[in-house]
Image 1 (cartoon, rainbow, N blue to C red):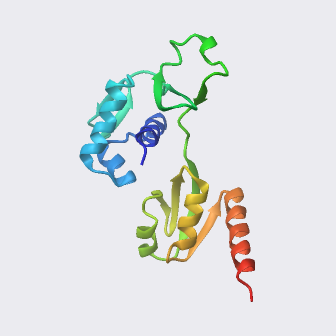
Image 2: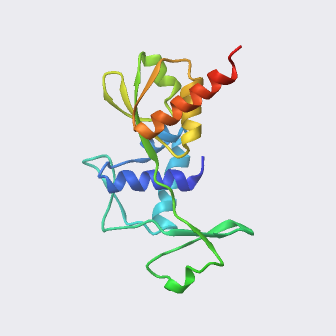
Image 3: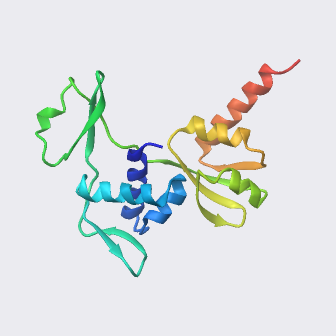
Length: 180
């Protein structure tokens, strides 16, 4: 899993006042606690985030408003450089460089018939909403839909509707292609 995706997730949780910590980051992305702590340190030391740990909430928050930097890359340079958007001259955003920002995750609500099903989709589940209903986050719709299709579980995709329609279309296509 890309460190940028993990940092972006961590940043989102902070901005939502979710007080994330390294243990939660490790559990969410199934990485070691040590790697999660390195990600948090990277956010603070390399990206300059004003992180403060709250003993009361057992997680981090920002001491002041903070925005993740923009990541710059060109088609010929696979190694991106990180820039502070506030410090850049607007003329740097020319056509000669490709610009992308860290993508916010999509979210979906699913219903599972058994607790064992939740274990199978654990890498996507961020929290239990109510009995048998879970909130999931993902960056690639196709990968998430594939996980739902191949899961050995009874899964009902409750929302968003656009993703539900995409899942139904994929299932219809598979069924049509396999009719005798």
